[in-house]
Structure formats: C-alpha cells, structure tokens
Length: 398
Image (tube, rainbow, N blue to C red; front, side, top):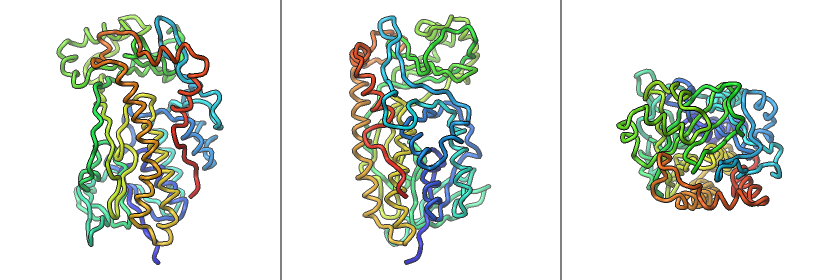
C-alpha cells in the first residue's frame, strides 16, 4: 500500500514532538501553526524528568540543556511559616533528577530546528485552520488561510494538537467532558535582585495562593484568584492587587510597583476537561486538545509530550506502510486514557481540599494534604515521582 501522510495542527509541545518523531521515522508530516513565531509569555514551561528522558533517548539532551534554563531538584512550599519540601526528584529512575524551567519558545524552537533536519518535515507558520476536509466518512485534511489565501492541505491523518481551544476538536464535533475549575491564575513578573531572599525554584507562598519561579533575572509570579474573579480584581484597582501580592510574597510592597498596568497582568483561565473520544476516522486529538489540565504540578506540557511519544510509537509504522486505521487511533487513546484520568483525579482531589474560594486574597492555612506531605520524609519522593514521571511514562520506540 502507499505511504500515508500526516497533518498536525498546532506547533506546541505535542504537535512539534509528534512532528519530529514521525519525520524521524520517515513519515511525511506538515505542522500548521496560526502564529508567526513562538514568542508568547506565561505558557507552560516546566520540562519534567519524563520529557528530559525522551530528549535523552533521542540523543538531544546535552544540546537541549545547553539552552538557558534553571534546574529544580525539588519543589517547596511555605507551610505554617517554614519552607518545606513537597516534591523530591532525587530518587527518580531517570537520567535527569530535576525539573528544567525553560521558556517554552526556546523548547519549541529547539524541536522545530531538529525536525527541520528531516526531509519529510514541513512547518507552516502564520496559517489559520478554518475547517476540515471530510470525504467518504473520514477527515482527509484541513482548509487553511495563508497570507489571505485559502488553501487545502490533504493528509491521510489529521492531528489536533492546537490546545484547549482547539479548532480541530470543535470542527470535528468531539464531545468534551467538563470537569470544572474553581480558580483562575494571574501571571506577572518582577525583577530579581541580588539581595532578594534566597528561595528554592518553584516556591509556593502561604496557602499556595502565590507561586514564585526564579527565571534568572526576574521572578515569574502566579497569583491564584477565584474562578471568574478577574473583573472584580480589576475593579478593586492595581494598588490593591499589589498589596495582596505583598501580603503573601517575601518581597516588599514597593517591588510590585514594577507591575505598572493591567497589560502587565496576564489571566490564565483554568480549565479541566477531556474528550470522551479522542478520534474519528482520519483524525486524532492529543495534548490539551484531548485533555485540558489544571496548572497544579505543571504537568500539562509533559502529558502532551507523552501523548506525542505514544502516538508516534503506535502510528509511525502503520502510516509508513499505508495501513493506519481507526483501530490505531483508538489504540492511542486507550494507551493514554489512564494516565490522563489518573492525573486529573489527583488534581481534583488536591483542588477539593482547598475549599470553594481558593482565593489568595483571603489567606488560609495550606491544604491538609500539603501539610501531611511536609511532615513526611518519604512522601515528597512519592509526589516527586507523580509529578516528575507520571502514571505511565512513554519511551521512544518509533
């Protein structure tokens, strides 16, 4: 039979990793991205040990880690006035026993450059997907707008890797199970100074309403608010937000004057959902297009990468020999459904312990499960394994 091709919508972690792996296996692949570049701030940029293991298996780890990044061998939270270890990666059976904090644009650019080395790989930037091509009961490609002109990209398999607002998923009529969310997150940055308090990377403040990530020359700050409360926060005014930040952060109020206006405050609308069925004939959804995750644990990027590895392992051979069928697409979902559901279950359990408000403007004691972990010498290693590796780590086989 003739070799089959693949069209991937979305040049995020899932889309570019799958594109790289399929091109590496000799499958013709086109990745379509609506933006002109990867330069967007406050995206998921925690690279977990499971993803670093994949990079090692591809022989790319040393070159990848030469890019600017910070390493966190453990994660910490402020528990009852003291800094406590809540996740320890030191005992993981991986080559890297740390989380790498790296701007996502550097990660994506690295994957795109490595994929471009293969002759069957093509990346189309600045192209908006406007619909699917459906013939004979199957998806056979996408319609795109490129520089104002509508074009058709035909492919034997179309993969939706275009995030939680997936146009591919919408156009395909994929049914979504909404798991709900009671919080949103505001992301900001303030400069990092030499005399700032020493804080472990990934420090979480009182009641875990605040997260501070060391980015070298600045702090990336995440502030938890109640779901849909951003307009209320804006109504209270920027000075009040600065006061709330200073109340839970180990920095003085004047440092938050660097947040000069609301354009400096970026809203992440937290969602948790999953597709009931990830596929239909000729189409597969992976990553956030198949399951939107809570930011708890920073696992979204890494689950997306694991989806891509599993998809490549299952689909590369059939695509190459022209036998890829709906049965293979169903096998991808079957492989990845358990780690997705298990991770979301843990996130839901953690969320429920927080209570309904989950608003850092009303500080409370840290959740009971965090206080329990902080008192144990063993449990931080367990949470380190759940965060760092997950429930079903994938390995390169394609």
